Image 1: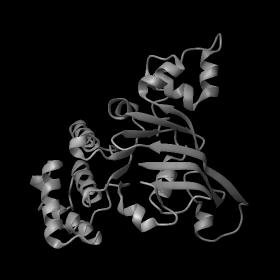
Image 2 (image 1 turned 120 degrees about the vertical axis):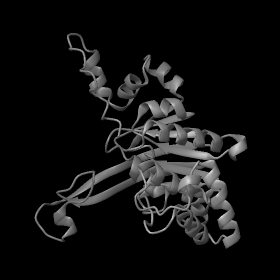
Image 3 (image 1 turned 60 degrees about the vertical axis):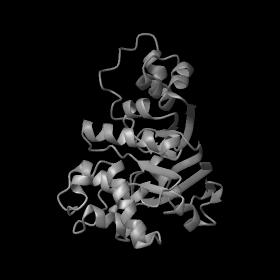
Image 4 (image 1 turned 180 degrees about the vertical axis):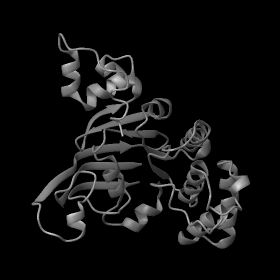
Length: 288
């Protein structure tokens, strides 16, 4: 189980934006005044075992920042992060040992084969070599990657990189799995395959794992997630099942429900008398 309680995180930038630091800041130059950017503000999230929890929000909502704090890359200013009851701030190694994190499928060692990438990460988890090799074999079957297992990662397709990176994240059989936009750049076949793997992992047969799944593709959230946390301006503004959020907003399409929840001011304008109908695709890029 993963629990985030009242997380708050700010960054100091010079002339930057929510997407990162400015060049002046990186080069240590003076000029633009320092600016405090609130990335996450009082975020709450409860992700139980045996369920897939989707994290959905517009650009700059704080999704990736929240997951990076969960991964221990930097601490929150205030708030608490727990993984199976273990405080990430107080016992980071223990907490990280209970998580498999897929943040970017590009971070492979290109000169190593898929098998060597997997075994290397197993060894980093203090797994004996024979167990590491056995685990690589088992994951090759689970993720249907037999044909690439002994190929060098250099030249892999996006789907092949994703499978190898996911295998690395799963090599120590963690109870909790965290995936930050894992379907980016995947074709339909690879996306369907990933979806089936995640459904298996959250099932009793797959270990009843806790899965946190960040995505900007609302169809993926509808098809895959047992519960959804909608983020806006660093906060969790709604939590529930897809059906529950549709009922809450009185909408028939999940995209419309998302806009009502994440963009309440814009939704109110759309509903105002005399307002022209929105153009097709208007919000399709808003949920990143």
